[in-house]
Amino acid sequence: MSIIHLAFHLEDTVKLFVAHARRFYYEVMLSGRVCPGCSGQVTMTDESRCRCLSCGQAFDPTVAFQSCVACGGSPHLRIRRYRCRRCSAEVHSQFVFDTLPFDREYFRRRMAESRERKRQQPVRARPVIADGRSGAVAPPAVELHAVPGLVEALDGLVGSPQMAAWLPLAKGFDLSRYQAHLEAHIGPIEVYFDDLPPLEENARLDRVWRSIAIIFMAHFGLIEITRYARGIVVMRKDEADREGS
Image 1 (cartoon, rainbow, N blue to C red):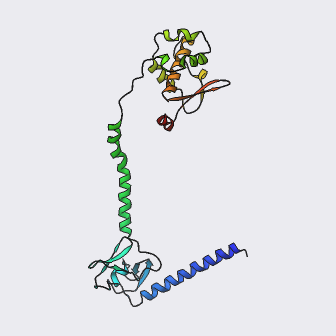
Image 2: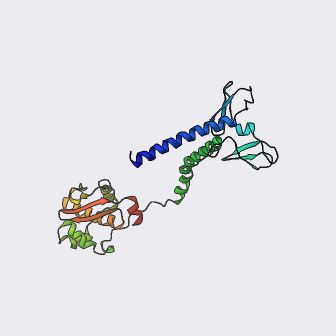
Image 3: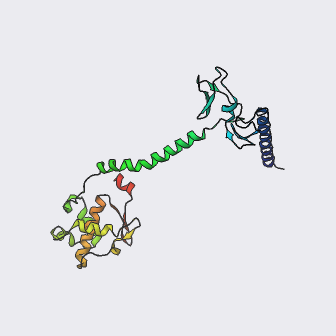
């Protein structure tokens, strides 16, 4: 047998010995003890928990059979320790073998309180978020020269150097309208600029206006523009990237 198999065998043997020792210990501690209700025979069911074999009553043997050595008061379980009700001295339970007692009702109550706090957190946060929310932001007026290199970038997007001269003279351009249109078609996955659907019938003018809107959206950190050999691709930035921007 390998040393690993021997180690597992030893572990199982120790566990079996501890189980026999625990059962024998409890038999000794309950020797001569009877149920407070019917005087029937009692048996341990868990750490500091026993049950009458006659009437089926379950109770805490530490509370039922022990008293404070300092003042004779009765003990009660406080979280993971027994305390005397009279003098608050710690009472060491004779009915706990190798661990600490466990106040199930206390932890059940605390878990319920924790779940309720988690449930209330979104409710309490809504007014705070609403108060801290800024008003609607209107897109600024389109000023091509406000962004350094914008005209040159538009040249590269539309592929026509002659357009740069008359771009500032284009009439009827609505940045908000184009931004809403592009946001509906640009997602978290890269898409080629040429695959974005047009918004105007005039294909040449629509391409220019889409280019302007995309440049401004990238400037405001809403999208990301990347140039590849096949052309320009755009994609929406996630929330973390937008907050960082």
